[in-house]
Image (cartoon, rainbow, N blue to C red):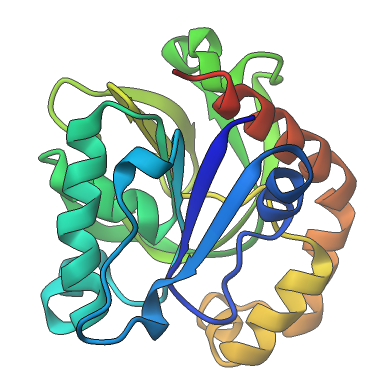
Length: 232
């Protein structure tokens, strides 16, 4: 059985369906990094086969201003160097992109709600997306985006944010969420009530968009986890 570590970086932003699937199918450890004490250390890499890095509303460019993220930053570099499979979601992907030599910039527009992403040729042939359709619905809640790290591959695109997923070696980054249910989206809307207004959406609209895509996203979230666990 695979031994997976999830690093959760924010109280409301859990990894939802990913976490549920991994609890049922792997030996899962969940660390609430934002709760770590000053002298608390991350667990040894040797204990795990796969790593998933969760989101946070903190910008990946502001890592050094937060004690827990400074500590995590060093740990993420160790994960990259280990060669073990690692998936970063939203800001988790942005931190990994920066460590790999990419940049984190403002997205052309904030994205909140349901959007469609498209796999590139490289994405269609990448092992993480085996069995995926060329286009599929995702949930978004972000203002920043990553660039593809040098020598990495662009796996998925979208609009208005043109870079949705990358891979470099043992590291994958996604800016989108498949793991979110309408229940999760409601929790996020409670945590960040003013943000939908910034792009002219209501809370009800965002939740409705998530609910409409929920069934398809759930199937794809499970497929993504199945594919991720096959990575060695």
